[in-house]
Length: 175
Image (cartoon, rainbow, N blue to C red):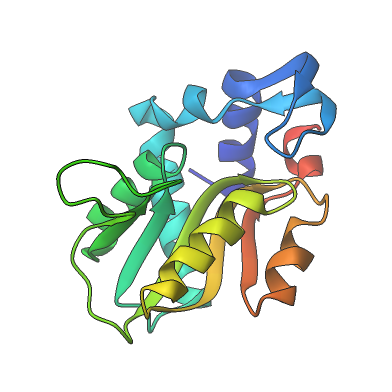
């Protein structure tokens, strides 16, 4: 599936119009419902393929992938399966039972990690994940996302030394 075909299918299945409050607190009249594409194998598989090509180009040296819970977990899982690269799940906060870990999965300090996100607006969730990963001694300098809403998230990440590459921009899906 070509990228324009994928963008059209995403828009058809997951682009909603109305009044929405984003994670950043901003309001928007358009919303890309990530769960409508992340839970559909017919969209998730080609997304993993396209993200895989972007990952190979943007950060081929990464030995681990990471995704913030909950939204990016299907994407990072699909990408890990496609690339054969182990992945980590970054919780919003450490759990208070069991292992009490914030970062789930095996890793060694000093490893290079590529962060995978679904939709980036202000970059808040991605920045929190970067902070947690770096706090665990991991190297995070690059990130990928399905959609960059072009509302400051890429710059916020760059300000923290993380280069973001997006598969799609708002114009690609009719936002």
